[in-house]
Length: 331
Image 1 (cartoon, one colour):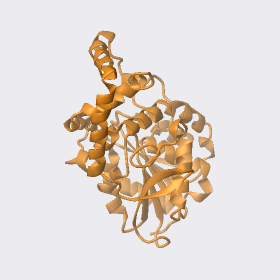
Image 2: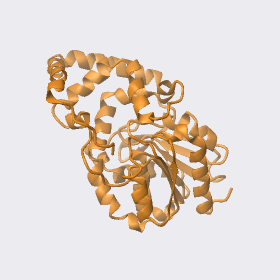
Image 3: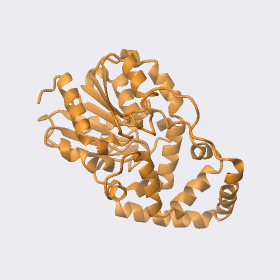
């Protein structure tokens, strides 16, 4: 999904590997500190919605806006390292006068439980989230997905196209790509992954989160106090790291399989993508998808990066409105 990075030289990795070896020897103490910090983070950023059960696992979701049956349903699916708070910063508030809004934590992230290796497949995630939403009533929704969530939203449509009004895909990961992911994702597939995750949870200063947030927003700036509003520290919990890293590592083969069915999509699809997106390249994902799926309408955003649900909110709202009109939902 990210563009291919340069791999670090082995000499640069020696201090890192030495530190990891030391942390492995001190595992119980590291885990104790991680336990304490994770409990603090969850107290500071508790669930903000409700739980439903799917296949014996809890799924966390929020429901906002208009009463059921009085306005179109819109489902919001977040991206990698995300949770529903990413949408409650501003998007949900802008939608709730005209829609019944349902946002869900993807399996293994936020407060939704993991299915283990099975939830590395966006198609399983789509089925789980659809079944969760159906438990609170769901009527032919518009389904919006950002980044990795765009792959899940597309899987949703592939599984239930007749029951889906339209898709809105924001900076979505949709097409196979060449190259590899970063060293850190590779490392998490080794036996060192667990102590790395524990060390990050135990020792990462909360202020250090600002740097990766700035990176994912480039070349634009994140909203003020974004880390606090988003509850970014929740992504540092060991289980969340493990689920996110596994899902990213396993995304490519699942995208390859999904892409074989894209020609079956005929529902309205509105796409937005930043021309300067450094995380999900527009020429790798959005443009090829729009060329192969006739019902897809792509709007490119000059100067925009990856987090367009925050930096280009008016364009997102316009895309949702186009999807609504194309789906015949009125308004």
